[in-house]
Length: 249
Image (cartoon, rainbow, N blue to C red; front, top):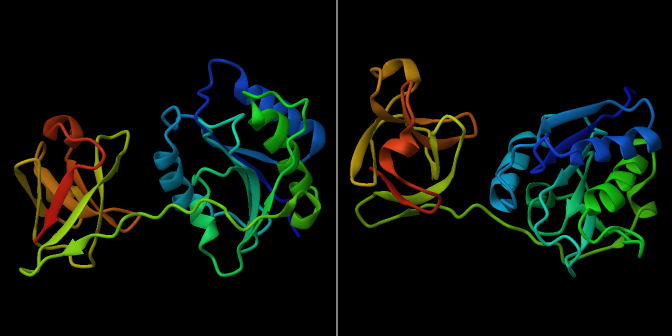
């Protein structure tokens, strides 16, 4: 069996040394275990963005991988610290919904982690989550790191709604670094028009089918409909934010 990896997803950035502290704990407690930096650029305190990011990658890694996720605006409060076993992977982080994608698997199990009185009230990533991630990566079973927990926060992507005229109504879920507007619209048919912010975007299959600067919509790699500008920034052009209404018809 290959050595499991520990992945890191945080909103820490890389300028302040917080990621370095996490890694210091991990290499001290799990020497030789590969550490994979996924991103430290989740927008600060943006649990929703973190959840959508986790959904994209957590099952892409091999069985045995430990995903350490720290997007934790409630650090130090009564929110629980948890670890999850799901489809052969582990996830460790705060119980605020950021780990939700792994909670919907049929075999998902959750434990609540102990928080030592000496742990920093502002840095559970270093003092609570990282030591547990290291233990799991070095062979500890889930039941050895915490107590069974049945009340984990489960956040779901809101489903789109089809009206009496057959139009599919949804909303903007997030905006990526390219300015692509990612919606909750799901379709297998790369045809039709998407209406958003008073503009209409025709459905295309690839960016290459659009003229440079054209506003279009397409099915993105996550399966959701995205609104984009070829070689441009759709969010900037439209002036939209998360939650804005979209219609596919």
